[in-house]
Length: 188
Image (cartoon, rainbow, N blue to C red; front, side, top):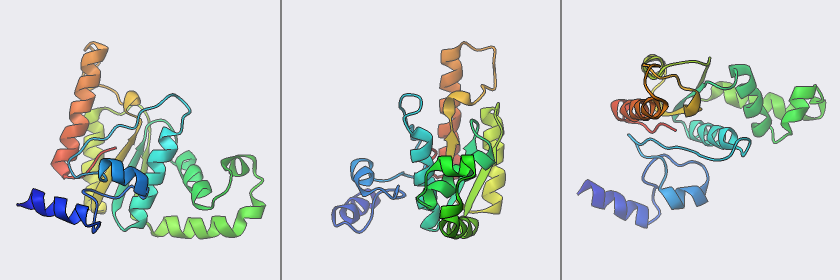
């Protein structure tokens, strides 16, 4: 009954199945990010996977949903820099090179908005699945989480580094899916 009621609500445009990514064209294709789901953004290096995932996370936080972004690749400062540049609609290089004066008003507004969002950023590489799960549980006590973004899965360390690489990746995927199901939220 619930599955049919959800399908009817989706068909009439009242909602998407899961959290809206903030991009209607993506939501039409995937139905949003469903609770308990594990979602993988894949692409070539430098193709914008981190930027897209971060944009979805910010849009979801803007809608009032708690988000935890775990960056294994970038520092929290670098991630915040990207987020501020995107929110201020300015080139990232302006912040990186100190030529951001022309964007001061937009940056101040973006910083104010970001500070008010239910958006947590954790950084630090070389985390295992178990450490990520513990970090997520701890964050869920501080903010009611509705999305976890892990950037990126290939950098997650296996709990058992002696396993062959294929088994390590399988264990990491399984751990991320278990986290999504345990907290009943999507993991990207």
